[in-house]
Length: 235
Image 1 (spheres, rainbow, N blue to C red):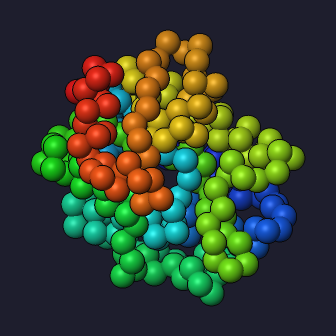
Image 2 (spheres, rainbow, N blue to C red; image 1 turned 45 degrees about the horizontal axis):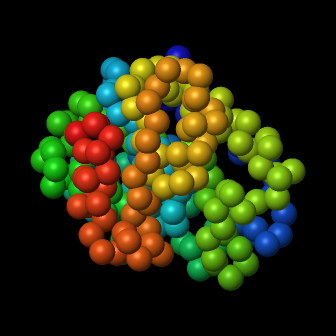
């Protein structure tokens, strides 16, 4: 099974799920940003990897726009060279318009993560020779006012089918890429990796999430992530 097949199976499994208030809109970029997502998988997801970095779910100005995990527009368009067309989602939130690679907003988390990759490794080819970046959950959840709602805040009854599909996709991805390390970007991703992959012989660690909501991340995320990866022995 290829990454594309794993992604399509996950897409089909989560696209039929329903979520209750306060969630009013759900974006599935594996549907409307499929061309960009496929380009990312095909260009950079070939072969085995030493390290898989695991995020939580799409941010409104990152993967929700580009279909690429932590997919800050400039990094996807200018560094990775991905330029496919992104269609609007089926039900678009009036405050969270999807403009694809024309989106003028920059996702801070993605700018930090991909900026570190660019500065540390230079070309995407060198970075992706050893690393790959995936999200645990492909869906983005929004409340009526446009506020982002993360999957850990969903009711348990809604988490169960969602997390079941995401767990299966994560296992299939790790089995295919066969990494030495899975690095959770933030505590949620690390906890999911330990729960889902704990018996598969892969080493699991964590780096600080690059969110601007984190005071530590705002004081030099790239330097801290570098130190954390070096302490683990990943770098």
